[in-house]
Length: 199
Image: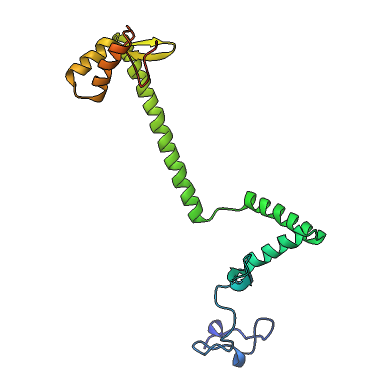
């Protein structure tokens, strides 16, 4: 064997146990009850705090509640009784929670939901803006042809427009309503858009 292909000498030291004591591939784990792969101390603590235990409810009945909820409830109860240490701890927790909410990065799911809400809002805003512009353009166009007159800043259809439309569709509710209003309010302003005619 040439010098280039000779394996480097194995030196025992920190993180390098003797080869005869090293874990061999396929061998059963020497610590089967050890920490699960991918878990951390934080995840284990969260799991413990989320575990439900039996406690006495406000009505005296036994109910199951998460450990973190029981701790929070008893801490607030102790603070409400005037315990200064508990009051200080509650205040610190409130401040930490407020800071966490300001600095916390949203989860991927929360970010996607927020993006979807923003897109829907932008779509609704654009639709409202386009509708308003079309409405204003229609009013101006009808005013140019003498079909609309303004009274106190509000647009009113001229009587001849309403009468002509009523002749085309006499069974429509607005056509019948138009005839009633013409009898009650004889005015040159004609029909208002969605309001009673001015007196």
